[in-house]
Every structure is written in structure tokens, then in C-alpha cells.
Image (cartoon, rainbow, N blue to C red; front, side):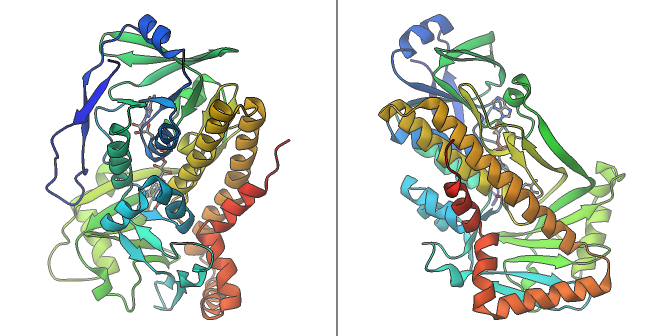
Length: 439
Ligand SMILES: Cc1cc2nc3c(=O)[nH]c(=O)nc-3n(C[C@H](O)[C@H](O)[C@H](O)COP(=O)(O)OP(=O)(O)OC[C@H]3O[C@@H](n4cnc5c(N)ncnc54)[C@H](O)[C@@H]3O)c2cc1C
């Protein structure tokens, strides 16, 4: 017995409760025995049970490859960050049995908008124009913890998988024969061996740091606030779509609907303290500024974020590959971080399957992965998300007007809309990635 996970109590109640939680009930094997038993068959180690870690684990397990996922937290984090799934992501998750479940739990957004807060003008982009290119020509609005919840549920059913909690990875070593991770366990440090390690341990990746991989880029000076409320903004703003980017030179905002709530994303001054930014008084003022109403807003969650644009210098060192936020982080305007991380996970897991099951050349495969996915982050995601921020906060009235005119022209002309929608929906990113040739 290596580790046994079992469903914990469903802390159901509110709309943000995870579908299922897990707790480790047995995990006491001596690491020497682990290595003896496990080194006879291909074995992938994964740091982190976020979207990138869970999706890569599921693909590998379905290929019959043994996987151990080490998660630092005691349960799957109830992570409210991502709420938008793009069409190619839904296409990729469908064969894993995840898209159908997400559709049941989420809200289809067939359109999204760019709006001007002052003039009230808006452009509506209809993703139906992508119907010939994807099985899912819409955004799905669904919180990211729902994905990790159902993915972990699927992992629990796989005999190839151990998903172990309370196990932060603290170090990594490797040689020609394999990779070893050091993990902090209840009785001290443990060492686990495998063939390859996927570092899906998020933006502050311990693995990336341990391997001394650069993470160049910048951090935005301003902070970003997300507040959720059951208040229905569709009743306040004319024709409001489920996803709307609202430009304003003083206070831009984003409105994102998920099944039971609206999420509001707002900028916060660089020097504001968390206590100030998240206080009831501040939130009420800011939400009433968006839509005045009688009485206070009910606020379901509030979180303050620092936001960065950074890409790892390489996605691969030897037997270790980075995926998701450990490899790239960007601002959330456009909803590309988790989606891109899932695209990494699918690409990487398929290549590991080809290495371990079909004898493909490991160096060639992993270098190709790094080249393909890094190119997307550098050329596409960073540029697109930063461009979205510049457009939404533009202060020059003439440029704001010109931008809105351009958005409306695109929305109204199918010849312009299709290329625009392909880019925003990350279809171009996936195609560009596929076009990167191996060395
Ligand atoms: C406000 C906001 C809104 C966003 N909205 C969107 C959106 O709509 N669409 C979108 O695509 N993206 C969005 N993002 C980005 C998205 O949340 C991330 O890109 C996504 O969570 C990355 O997934 P991941 O699996 O790489 O990392 P994470 O989700 O960060 O998961 C990493 C996991 O690793 C665990 N871990 C950390 N350290 C260790 C360790 N040492 N050992 C073991 N485990 C460890 C963590 O506990 C966690 O479970 C948003 C981000 C923000 C801030």
C-alpha cells in the first residue's frame, strides 16, 4: 500500500464548496521500499494537484502509466482564480470525460463584450463564428476548483495513481537513470524516485527555483481585487454578456458570471493595504460605483492579487518539465493562464506517453515540448493579455474612441470576427504550438 486516498466529507453548502475533498489515510511506506517496488515500471512524479497537475496525471494514468501526485495542501485548494474555459481546452478535456461534467456545473457564455464605462458603448463578440473550428464554440464559465474536483475524482478511480496530500515537494535531483524528489512528510523528509517529474507546483514553483531556471518578466505595480456577489449585474447594464471587459481611464473593471455569482475584477492602487482594499466599506463603495442599488451588496468572497507577466527560461531540464503557472504567468484579462497550463499538460503528458510506451526519444520529445509551449507563452499569451490591459485602462480619449470603433467593426463583420475570436479563444495559440517543429 503506497498511499490511499478516500473521499472526505463533502463540505457542500455554498456555491463555492468543492464537489469532493480527499484526505490521505494511509501513507507510511519507507522510501527505500518504495524505490525497490516502483522502479520496475515507468513512473511519473508530479508536484502539485492544480489544473495542470491533475490533467497531466489523468492522461498518463489513462495510458496505463503509474503516477504519483504530491500536493502541498491538506485538500484540493478551493481555488477561485480561473473561471473561463476556452473552446480548445474544452475540446482537449472532452476525451478525458471532464468536459461533460464541467458543462453540467458551468454556464455557457456564447458571447463576450468590450464595453466603455463612460459612454456605455459596447461591442459583442459572438463565438458561434467558431462553430466550424471547435466542438465548443463558447466560453464556459466555471470555477477552476470544479475542474480539479472532478479530475481528482477520476484519478481516485485509477489504480495507476497515488494522489497524496500534505506532501510539499522541497527538492529535486536527477541522473541518467531517473529523478528523485524530496517531499516533506509527517515524519520528516521523504525521497521518492521516478522516471520523470512534472513541476505543476504553481507560480512560486519550488522545482523551478531548485533547478535555478530563470523566470524573467515583470510584476504590475497595481494590485487586482476580485469580489464575488450574487447580485445580478445583468439587470443594471444594458445587454450585459456573461463576460465583459469594461474600459475606463480611472477605474476599469471586468464582470464575469459563474453559475451562482458574479465576479468583479477591479484594479487597486499599488500602495493600498490588503485591509483597506478588502474592507467592507471599500468594497461597497466600489460595487455601488459600478451599479448603484438599495442596501449593501452581499459579498461572497474577496481576494487581492499581485499580478505578473513572466515566462521560464526553459520548460525542461533533464528529466524535469515545467507545466502551467510554474512555467508562465500572466494577467487574467483574457482568461489564458489556466487554459494555457492545461494545454501544456496535455502536450507534455502525450509526449511522456510516447517516450514511455512507444520508445520515442526523450530528449527530442521534451525539447520539443519546451520549444512549442514556451513559444506560445512568449509570442502570444504575454502579448495578448498585456494588450488587453493596455486597452482597458487607456486614458487618451481619442485612442479609447478609436479602439471601441475597431471593436464594434470587428464584432459586426464576420471576416474580421473569425480571426479575432480565434485569437481570443486560444485556437491560434494551439495551432501555433503545433506548428513549432522539433529540432
Ligand atoms: C484573479 C485571477 C483570475 C484568473 N482567471 C483565469 C481564467 O479565467 N482563466 C484562466 O485560464 N486562468 C485564469 N487565471 C490563472 C489561473 O488561475 C492559473 O493559471 C492556474 O491556476 C494555473 O494552474 P496550475 O495547475 O499551473 O497552478 P496552480 O493552480 O497554482 O496549482 C498548483 C498546485 O500546486 C500546489 N503546490 C504548490 N507548491 C507545491 C509544492 N512545493 N509541492 C507540492 N504541491 C505544491 C498548490 O497547492 C496547488 O494545488 C486567473 C488568475 C487570477 C489571479
